[in-house]
Length: 547
Image (tube, rainbow, N blue to C red; front, side):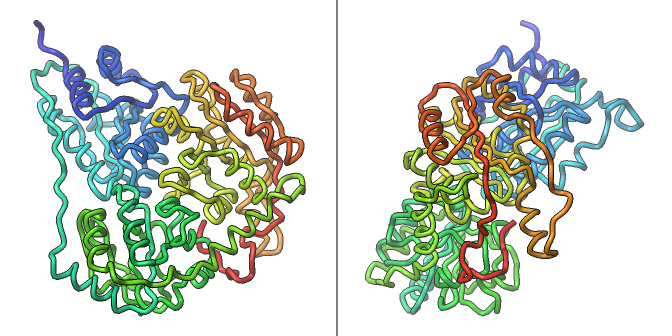
């Protein structure tokens, strides 16, 4: 038999990593790779823009813990990946980006479509490599996936020169190996337990790391056993069921969040899986004087407002289980639930609000009623994201997905396609602003082609709403934020999907409950009224933390 091409061995390495999908757009420089994928167990998913493909890989990685893979060719294909690769980098989603490149022999000079992609990707990836020799393919692929999936996960990148991928190669993939995690020493765990037991008003701040580490149940057991209150970042919604007595609410929108969740009075903050990129510790520890225990998978970032007394680094699930046993006799009374009660009372009262265009709390109340506890809501970026982060209740982890670290618009639609591929048995709903939706609306065709029955809701107000709100608050006027829209219903129908424009809140309710029963993608346009301030209460303070 002839020796296989390097491109075929590369795809065998992807198969060895358990890759099911590659999301992207093929190019001339990746022809050999595409041919090899066609003869493999990997499904290539053509998308309509490389950014959409990278967002799909991002969310595939978030939901599975295994790196999602996206593909672009050289030049513009690579540059189109950048925003979503950066999103995965900051939101700790395992992703491997593949880009084509011209032949090695022309990289030293000016050349058609050639740019230094390696340098461009360096600030937004954990690691990247160029395949300068086919013999290094097994090592490079294994390293890219290992680093992408290791805590804290993120994006890696491999550049594939066309001439290298066409060369013959006789090699085998390297086997996957479990990544060993360190364990804190017993003395530090006992010191942490003593600090917790001797505290008067401790509070838990949970971040996205709890979900990534599959430590949700351990956190719930720890909180219930000790009767400790848990507040979370937006990305950690669902780490504690919002109906649980231990749930204090999602913090990070306004400065007053932390006060109403008990942080002002807390003499100890137990930060579990908390990423500073989610929101800065200066908002909950403005004086830099709180006692802090850090429980995480990697050492904490240096920040003058985040100086811990004890740092427990390792498997979060294991650490929490030990602390649960050590603190079993403690009872801290459940914490300060004022934030949770204020927000939930406002959401509950909205069910009788007949104002139309709809106000955000009524829209969110209807969406929550149409969803089961394991169904998935995906928020795009805009003023609606702040409402969802503030108010939308979650029962389980990874059921409210938000682009937070980079906060790039256009996230929700491609993210929903990936979520439906991972969880075909769950309802998947997106909430988009009309500004953000237009940034990746071409992926409606991908959703129809893949037959992923997602429900896309567009909150329409013909403005960049979050900027309007901020300009009005800062300057007393707004400018440069108004636009017109296409007829979204006709647009969706032109892609071959059912679509409706809601004419009342009751009509929206009925359309939504019908849409979630369909086996095809659908779209609902909901005229929205943002006149209700997202801050919802003076108690929460004027200062806005989230963006």
